[in-house]
Length: 334
Image (cartoon, rainbow, N blue to C red; front, side, top):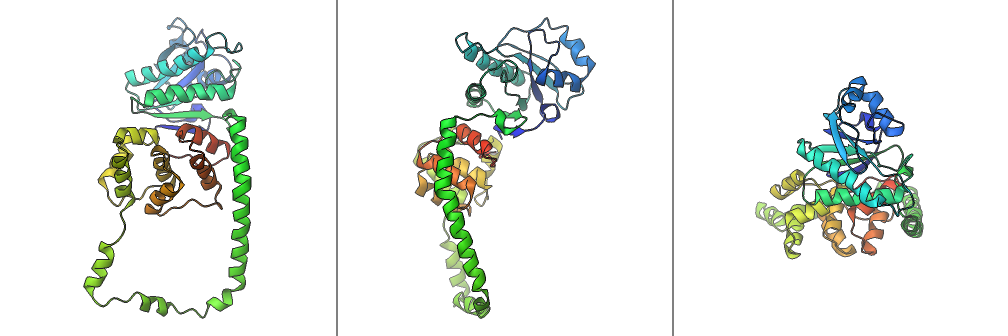
């Protein structure tokens, strides 16, 4: 899972490296900084005193001590002063330098807080955009599991315009079909006594074969699998494997399993991630999802949100995941 967002206490997240939103002294402070120092213990402060502080936009590394990580990467985010003082460039550098340090020290996983979005007052929606951009740029050239750790969903502020648009789409599609579903369910319940007369033997008789060869012919004519369909679509669009699994926010090792196993059955969020990576239209999306046994239904909120992005030709997996997170839905590609 290359990049995901979770709600948790960052001091309890297991990763090779945890990133600390530190101040210039590196000697501890409030918020995430203070929590990490308390969790790691006095030895962390002792090592930090030897580092000589840290400039804004830079990063330094220490041992993890009592934390459930090998390393703590300390980076100093910019204080928000209206956006005209290189805040974006400095914040981007925080993520970039931290990720490079993690790679240099052989880390395969790293967890970040949303840097500068607390007492440094960087607007959360803009802070998330910078974080996503920096992490996406890094993952385009590197393999690493990156996690954004927040206390609650309000810490991830998606564009209000986008949220309103998605909410309207949900209101127009999700509620109506759910009501239809419940009405159909009620009718089926009322008619249940009539269904008792149905004889399963009639179905058995309908599936009778004249010979063993007939059975073999049926299986020979089965449609292509999800794996076959996915690889065909990749080839048809002249994409490389790496382009697709990175754009889908899928781990390279998972993609290797899909490529090597013709009968691989992906999770729904994995299958949907490939729909987004391939930029399929709604009919192509349904075709690929059906190969894995899934569909997009207006009676499932996750599906409605995915349909919104496909129909509006928005194929940014990170923007989609931020929106799914805001609506308390599972993320795709993870």
